[in-house]
Structure formats: structure tokens, C-alpha cells
Amino acid sequence: MAFFAACNNSSDKAKVESMNADSTAATTSTATTMRDINSPYAVSYSSKWEIGDPKNAETILNLWKDWDNGNLMNSKNSFADSLTFHFSDGSMMHASRDSALAMAQKDRDNYVSSVSTVDVVVSTKSTDKNENWALIWGEERLTDKKGKKDSSSLQEAWRLNKDVKVDLVYQYRARLSPPKKK
Image (spheres, rainbow, N blue to C red):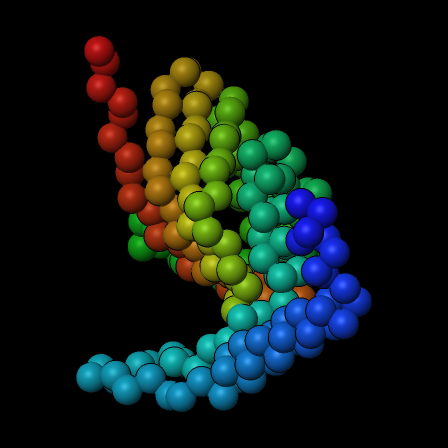
């Protein structure tokens, strides 16, 4: 162990730091100069994306936590004055922030418990549209006031406007089968 420590002098540390800086620069430049996607399909929205600000993903994680905790008013300042939700059942809602939060709180109040787990969360930016999005995949386990349990896998795409406020959400849901009794 002493041999390895003696071999690691300050000039070696500088070389390692230099190599790390070079690899970071290469990664960054690769991400910003990525070639266009050659798709056999017409891409109707955008195919020009890059990684976005992590704060956008953190905003959505906090929104999920406020849902689990049952207090959506904690999230009020994370929403634009008007917003649009496209729900997993095919319905859509366009409403003022206050109306949307009141409806969501009324729905959440039907449950005594909500427990979410997050599998993936990523902040992205559509470079050709100059839009910020946060994408999240996870599971939601709900228990209603009668004790009925419901579990779903969720995928959601949340758009954040120039003021970093949510103004558009797309939700996709797949019901999970209840665990089999042994």
C-alpha cells in the first residue's frame, strides 16, 4: 500500500485531473454535436434532444412527493397559471392552476395512502423547440378509504415553460397485477 502511495506524486495527480477534464470535454462536446436521427418515420414533435437542467427533474420529484403526502398546495408555485393534463385514460383537462390543483386534491383525497417509487427520472431539452421537459417512470400504489389497493406503472412527461413552471403533462399508466397469494 505504501508503494502505491509513494508512486502517486503531485505530477501524476495533475495528469489524472487533466485526463478527467479531457474526457469530460469529449463527453460534453459529443452530446452537443450529436447527429440527427435517421428515422423511417416522420417525427411529428421533435427528434432533437439533449440532457436538460437537473432542477427540472427535481421539481417533478417534489410534485410526486407532494401527491404521496396528500398536500398538493405545497406544489402550487411549480405550476403555470394555466395548464393542460393528458391523462392515461384518454381524458384531457385544460384549466387554471387553482382549478387543476383543486380537482387533483379532490381526487387525491379519495385515498388514505399513496406510495410512489421512481425507476427513472431525467431532465431533457428539445433543442429545436427550446422546451424543457422532465420524464419520469415509476410505480404508484394507492389505497382508497375502503381499503382497496391499486397499483400502476406510470410514465409521465412534464413540460416546464420559460418560467420553469409546469404547463403540460402527458401520463401513461399500466395497471399492475395484484401479488398472488401463497
